[in-house]
Length: 525
Image 1 (spheres, rainbow, N blue to C red):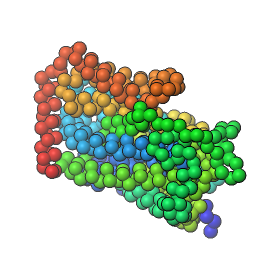
Image 2: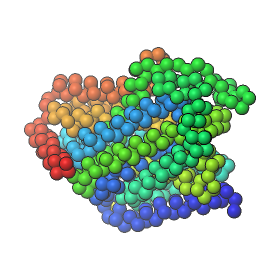
Image 3: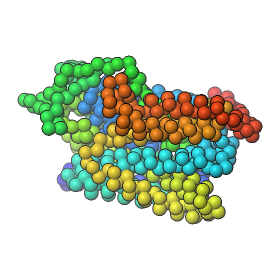
Image 4: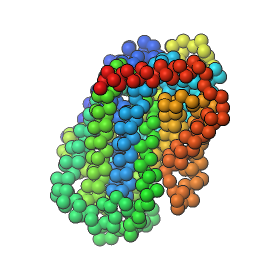
C-alpha cells in the first residue's frame, strides 16, 4: 500500500470518530438553543479545560508557532508562547469563576453578547449588536486561518491542489458543526486536545533524536546569527521573495536586537485571552463552578507542555532541514515535514491527525459562536423577539454556512501565513472584548456608555494600528493588541466617570455575582 494511502486511511478513521461524536450528541444538542449554543451548562472539569485550550490554539499551534520558530529563531516564538501561557493562567485565575457566576446571575446568559447586554440591563441592545458584529467579523477571519491550515496539510501530504483541499476541509467542518452544536464540539475538543499534545510531544522526541540530541541541535543552530538568543531577531537573506541558499545552506544577515518595548509587544499576546469568546464560553458552560480550580490546573499544564513543544519543534526543524522551507508560509509546514520524513506512514497519519484535530476543534468553535451571535443576538433579540428555538437554530445554521463560505473565500490564497492571520483576529478579540470583560467583572462603576465606547474604540484601533500606524516602523512597530487594549481601558474609565453611575439594580447584581464567585472559590479551595 502506498504511503499516501496509509496516511489517508488513518486520517479518514480519525475524521470518522469526530463525526460519530457529532451524531451521538445531535439529539441532545437540538433539544433547545441553550443546549446547542452552551450545552446546558453541563461540562465537567476535564472537558471544560481541554476543550477551551484545543479550541483556542487551533492549527496555529502545530503549524503557525513552529513556523515562526523555524523562520525567525527562538526570540519571537519564545516570548509569544510565554505571553500566551501567562495569559492562560491569569484568565483562568481571575475571570473564570466570576464570569461563571455573573453570567448566570445576569439573566442566565448563554452567549458573550448576551452577557454584556444583561450585565448593563440594556433596553436598546446597542452593546449586544456591536458585540455580535465584531464577533462576526473577527471569527470569519479566524475561520479562514483554520481553512488555510487544512488546505496546507492535505496539499502537502497528497500533492493535491491547495484550493480543492481547503474547500473540502471547510465543507467537512461545516457539516460536522451543523449536526452536533456545542456539546459535540466540546466533547470532540477534549479528544482532540489529547491528540494534539500527544502529537507534539512525540514529534519533539523523534525530531530531537534524529537531529543527534539537544547538544547537537544547539551546536547546529549556534552557527545562525541570533537564532537561539532571546533578545535578537534573525534576518534571513531573501532573493526573489525566498531565502537565499548557497552550497546547500540558507543564508542569514546579521541579527538585530530586541528592545524592551518589542518584548512587551510580543508578550501582549497574553492580553488576548480576556476577550476570547471560545474560552470564555467554557467558563460559562461548566456544570459545577467549584471545579474551575481543577480545570485551571489542567488547562495551564496542557498549555505549557504544548507551547514549549511547538517552539522546540520549529527550532529542531531548522537544525534537521535548514534549506527545505524558504518562505514564512512554507515554514509553517515544518511539523508535516518532520512527521512524513521520520515516521512510517501509519504513524505519520496519526501525527497529521494532530493538525487536523487542532483545526477542527477551533473552526467549529468559531463558526458556532459567530452564527449564534447573529441568530440569537441580532435576529432574535433585535428583529424577531417572538422567534422560536427552531427558527433561531435555522437562522444560526444558515449564518454558519454563510460565514464559512466567506472564510473559505479569504483562505483561497495559498500564500497566506497562518500566524499573521491569527495574530490579527486575536488582537481584534483581545482589544474589543478583553477590557470590557475585565471592567464588567471587577469594576462596579463601569457604565453602559463606558463599556460601549471602550468596545468600539478597541476594535477600531486594531484596524488603525495594523493598517496605518504600525507600517511607519520604529517605536510604532508594536503588535496592535497592546495599544488597542490600552486605549480601550482608558476610554472605559474616562467615559464611565463622565456618565451617570449604574443603577442600584445593576450594583446589587454585581455584588450578588461577586459573592457567588467568592463562595464557589472557597468551596473549591
